[in-house]
Length: 590
Image (cartoon, rainbow, N blue to C red):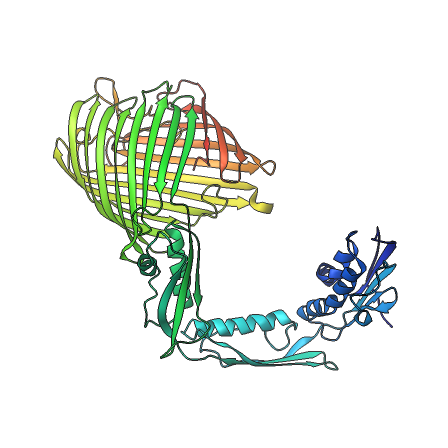
């Protein structure tokens, strides 16, 4: 006797007459929902525009769809009946009568869930770990069999056997024992080497350059991870909107495998603008222009312009114009050439400076998370502060590394970010000689459903080691206060006091920021924050002065990053005036 565990009846107006859909499914709740979702008949019958032939065609296709769903769940002895007005759908012609249907009935008896009996797949490379679900005594189903097949094939491909495939399979359902035996035979095929590499879709980027960046050198053993990394390198250049690397269907001469790189190029030029405003610092405007493929080598050239301090209460206006050139895969496929430079004029609360600089070097991209760079640079500046007007000329050798494990760089909810730099420099004129060390560490931890609550923390460190404080340009020394350090305190209000009562920058900086972020609705969130800053005259963070600030903020998620509104108040410090400061920008504070 059939046991109906789940049954449902649904009424709707059909194309010709009223119709009734009946579902009688002997299965657990999850399987019932899976069968309902897989059924084309239910979907077609609920469509008021569906004709009779549409429902008949859907019903006839449902036998295989429902059977596949049952096999997926390990039920290998089911019965399926789909009746349209009392006639089994399999017996009906798709074309013919045009009148509507009165009753659509789907009845499924899932039967027992089978367990795996014998499970075999061979040959597989030594050390291959097959899925735990593909084992004798485990619940049977087609998904574990597929996973085992994919695991074996990928293991052979990782060893250069690009054409590995399942040569034979023997699947036997032993109904009295309710067991499923699965035996798969794998044909690894020959170990292949890369053959000729063809490029398709390149218009402005040179084909030779694309091959150079991909670096799938002919004669090297095929490696699927290497192919994926080649595609990522090409995508990372920014010159392409899509990249696909495909293998030839047929093996080439001498057991080689021809490859094809298909690319779609982006529009080469792009520009953008941005703005940020704070009650103390004033309005800041930025703009950039970018060429993604300057010379046909997938090399990028970007020009940035910036004006800050418009209408600011604590300082004058700052101007800067800079450029950045990047040529990918110059020294090797993972190492780019970069050239950066620019000019700037700063009118800060405690110093003014005119500066020009240029830097060139190599940037190695080890992975999507980790990269480092090294190079050589020169900068010249004329600085005026409480110590007078001085000229500085420095030759530097910067080293920098970044490790980024954030889940979303624009609005992180989990992970961490580490950036550190070491810059030895040799000074001319009034410049000293020494080393600059800087680090920026950020961590994020989300809690609750959807990680709607996030605790974020940031530690900033900076130190100038070696020269005396009067041998360091004002733009290199450290100040605290304002949007990038301690919100609520006046911009660059904390520094080192001279004997005459003036303020100059310190040789070391320690900053700590914490935020508690909470989503209120799908787009709106609130933030509470506390910031700490410490400036020291020496390079070891001792004998310094510190201050703190705290406040609340709002976030509106735009999908490409949140719009930020923060209101900060000074909590403690030598320059505590008790006022509030407002900060508006795009993106989280850190």
